[in-house]
Image 1 (tube, rainbow, N blue to C red):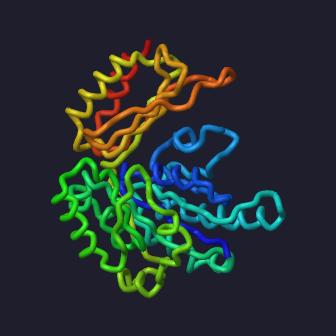
Image 2 (tube, helix red, strand yellow):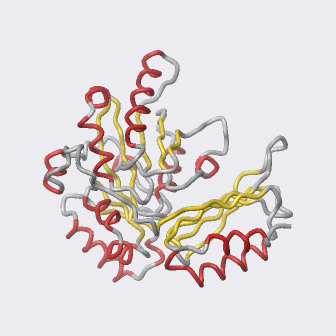
Image 3 (cartoon, rainbow, N blue to C red):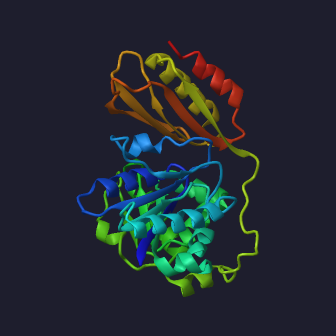
Length: 323
């Protein structure tokens, strides 16, 4: 049976950073990655791979536990057929859910569909928790609470941004919420693979204790409020770095609490490298990405996810940052 890891955590917790670390390790395994984004376009191929001949399987415009879960079943079945025919080879599957997903219905897939259950083994639900923003996220978002509750392992990220006593308080809170899941730290995705892969951590009985209706596929168990939305900024002209930095600083100051997540790949004037830009609330930063290839179309793409964001104002401001 093919082991499957569900990688979850709220928006901006560090799931993609952890996934990039897993994929870059010399473990000698082929990993099929299925990624779900809450938004019209994903930029994580650029974040994960420098060689674009490699691709992740993307499911956009929805949450894995909502409208596209049927697509997940179809994808898993199709992957197995292609593996059996020799078209592709892989040793395990990692599913990275959108930060707005509750992992329970995703895990349910491996028990309620006979074909999936015959060929795939749900190894574990791994939840990444943002040390800086978790107290607020857990208080305001049922999805964040469910992600902690269903976890078989809890990895706390961004621990360098909080005081030692606040970190200990968060760890104690997580243990109260989920006593059976070990809590460890993951600085920039650095954690032993032996603690997150092939751990046989998922326990159906424990899942049923958390949610007695776990195996009931008829219940409508999850919805997103209309106030959470996403939009994309896309441009085929370079950005002026100073104007962009000034604008994003102003946006984060004005709308920080509403900005759940924003990330993008930027074309910056004067640079021959992509700029990878990411942020959560008022915390943001950029890193130099891979070089632009000579035959590659250069463009900027930034995805914003938030509550009640002034979409038109932000898009107009970004347009004014173009050279």
